[in-house]
Length: 75
Image (cartoon, rainbow, N blue to C red; front, top):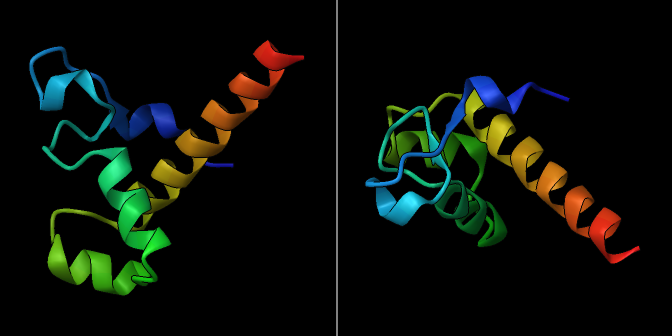
């Protein structure tokens, strides 16, 4: 799995502190929402040229890790 810590940033004053991609104003949630809606990686990059395929993979890795943390807390 990609080391998302190189790609995902948290800044208190940006997007209400939500995790963002490389300090941009594009949140992990934004990327995941586009993927969930059926957009391909290529379509997302076409709409947000500042993103790279690695950025999108990092968003997926971040979400997987967040889910794993929730499962550990619940058990």
